Amino acid sequence: MSKLSRAVNIEDLRRLARRRLPRSVFDFFDGGAEDETTLRGNRAAFERVRLLPKVLVDVRQVDTGIDIFGIRSSLPMAIAPTGGVGAGRNHADLMLARAARAAGIPYTLATPATASIEEVAQKAGGRLWFQLYVLKNREFRMRLVERAKAAGYEVMFVTVDLAVGGKRERDLRNDFVAPFSPSWRNSRDMPWKPAWLFDMARHGIPTMKNLEGLARSSTRITDIAASVGREMDASFDWEQLKELRDAWTTPSAPRRWAATGSWCPTTAGGNWMVRRRRSRRCRRWCAQSARRSRCCSMAACAGAWIS
Image (cartoon, rainbow, N blue to C red; front, side, top):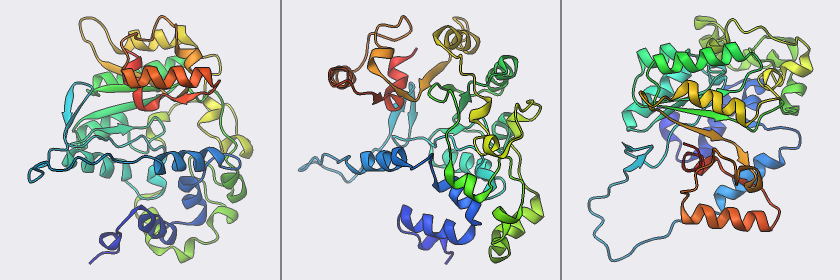
């Protein structure tokens, strides 16, 4: 029996990853920005979720399927975008996409993935979504949109809450850079991680395939630690979001898309791009958040907000 099959929960998987990966790579996956208060808050929010049971119901045949963006999914979930996942294991993007297809759920490819848009479509297939970072290089980001369209991706998610990169302190302490470049500080425990070391020696250190050809604006280590954020377009606004929408979907070839991130109800409310036909629960929560001068995370219901 493999070690992976002995894992009975997510924390078991986390411990296995910590044993397999060099510290710098593990911290890249496990960490957040600055004091990681948002990271802890997100986890606490999920831990507050409770399932409402229905009793005295025949559950011999359970159907966990649900329609997501108008298409049936076998589970009410999808694989979220994870940039640089190949730093932990080569071909990890393809593995995740194939697992999603086998499970009958969508897979979301991140902009800084270690497999290209075309490679995932050709070698994995299934229901494919694409997550787009709004890069400063507008020509390059529009090219990513066209590539995803040509490859048959079903939905595009535009990340709108990353105007600048976060200060990822674990990465700074570990001298972790992306794409990964070995140094004494980030590599000193690699000899004690033979499985990871053999994988990288055999296949090579993966690169961010979708960002190949993008001119980088900085080479400073403090900027590289936030490698994605330093390439973001801080001027991105509603008009530019409309341009992306119009490039992705047309009346003759409609496609689903969503703007994702942490939204403030007072920002989204009243804008000409926001749908009025929102769920009753979403409207009630946003109204409460606005009265309390609080921002709510709209990532979960972004598809209901944006056409």
